Length: 283
Image (cartoon, rainbow, N blue to C red; front, side, top):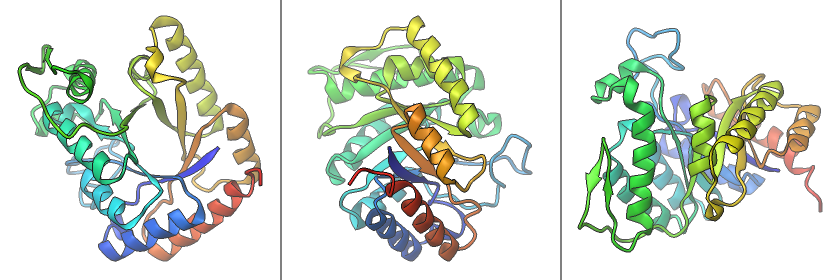
């Protein structure tokens, strides 16, 4: 089981000096993945379902990951997650390919359908279409990345007789979410799945993924579905919980050093969890 960190593109740690310090520290400590989320805008005033206040700063994930790519050499870089229906898939395909090439093939594109209606509406997306857009956009981007003659014709995106280079080296798609649709999307279109919560939540999510595997086909080229899981309940891990996640088959255990108010506290959080998780590895 590998160790990752999430969320260090927000609040008090988003400045360039803190980003360089924490990214290099995470890599030195043995973290194998660095994940960042996305909110283009947030409801103002804050609504109950919003994860952040509208005045909480958060950087664009692709811009922040490009910066982190330049100051690290080994750590994988992931979006956890990009709200895919809010993005133009043709433009995003170019951005993803660019980041993957510049990072030396270290990029993982984590996507989700979104759930905040004010955020989706602000970029002109109907909440009711977010699922169909997510599926179409994934398929359209895959055509641009892999097909000899890219073409796609759907309800929300359509193109043909175009091409885009460079092609990405090794982009892996990670699908986030806990709904039946998200589980089915992860099985049918994702190299991995991204979820969050506590150990008992994960048991239920794994059951949902298993049911989805009985309902939809999984292309052979995707291989085994990787499990990326972010611990949120509680934020700080202990040894028995780490062992439970390993037994459940988590591939990447991801920590989130909330509340992101003090960079020194975040550094100590990273050091504590590196010792707790990496000391379990053989050798």
